[in-house]
Amino acid sequence: MSVQIVEKSGEGLSRTYGVTVPAGTLAEKVNAKIAEITPTFKANGFRPGKVPASHIRKLYGKSIMGEVIEQNVSETTQKVMADNQLRPAGQPDVAPTSDMDKVITGDADFSYDITVELIPEFEPVDPATLKLKRPVYEPIDAEIDEALAELATQARTYVPRTGKSLKAKDGDQLTIDFIGRIDGVAFDGGTAQDTDLVLGSGQFIPGFEEQLVGAAPDDVKTVKVKFPDDYQAESLKGKDAEFEVTVKAVKKPVDSKPDDALAERLGMKDLAALREVITKNIGERYANASRFKLKRALLDALDEKHSFALPPRMVDAEFDAIWQQIEADKAGGGLASDDAGKTDDQLKVEYRKIAERRVRLGLVLAEIGRRQNVAITEAELSEAMRQEAMRYGPQQAQQVFDMFRQRPDLQAQLRAPLYEDKVVDLLFSQAKITDKKVSKDALLEDDDVPEGYGG
Image (cartoon, rainbow, N blue to C red):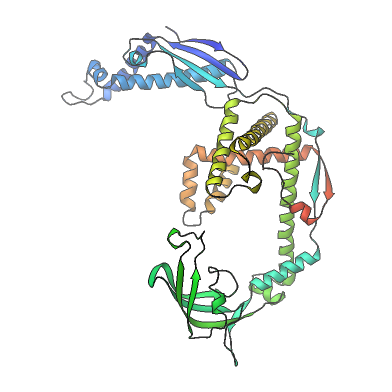
């Protein structure tokens, strides 16, 4: 009584196999499992290990049969993949074709279909034939000077105002206590003490800071404002409010200078060392932008040079993920301006093309990586998990890291971009790349088409 497997259909990238497992084969496996657990099985009224197999079958026969069926489906699916040398594009679908109630009771053979979507067979482009232009821009001294000046501005200090006038000016830092009220009643989150506020910084809601210009220490001011209609707290949107503000200190700004003293305050040896760090950071920013543009050019070239049938379910899954984000953006008022005037039908056509491109490029990169033995090492994955965990702060980092170690699905989400970057770096090393000097604006300008698409 052996399992029968026949190919029922094989059109395009889809394959369907019919599997029949005789009832007798299932019964043998059920009997074997019962025999395996009998020596240690415990039940009321019986000594340990002396429970009759018939009693175990009566109590747990259906659940044991369920385990046998599940194990059988897993084994036969793996056998179908291996025997036919299939490369599935996703998890195979399993659909029973027999009466499962009768199968569970042992009165019918177990028959089911396994439908699998395949990764298409294609010949990827030879990376050595790719010709790419890399936009590059080198920072000039004026930019470094500007960055140093901005850093000095950010590092300014504040000292109490002295002299004839202690009144606050725009740009001064006030230390204040305040109580906010609506219709004379204090509201949650509207009270604070010893709050530092730089006038003109836009830290508080519109109209608040302007009314404190001219205030002096020990002044008590009534500030009248209206919360914006789009304010984050629903209960405060569009509401008129009054704040009783007590001014405790008025301090004027003292700008720092880009000199050795500033560098030492920031932990550097001297101004030259600080300048070197800033130059490196700015250079890295431009290098990252250059790499992004080069990667975009690479993906465009790969997309142009490959045309093959795509697994429909992969495209559908990618499109569904994109469309879910589009609907969320629409609901939150964050839809891109280029899409705002389009109908859903128009958007669906455009974003399905994007989904098709992403799937096609994913398959191309995966195939190139497979042929050139690209792999993510455990050390690389562990480092990626550590970096991701550190984003949650030192208190939660270990907990997040442990979660990644226990969740293969989360590890897969980290592996995917690591793998893509490794393949992209490999292609960069083999393609013919020439540098093209461009302006800073040209290097940093956004692409005018959706991410992942192309021109």
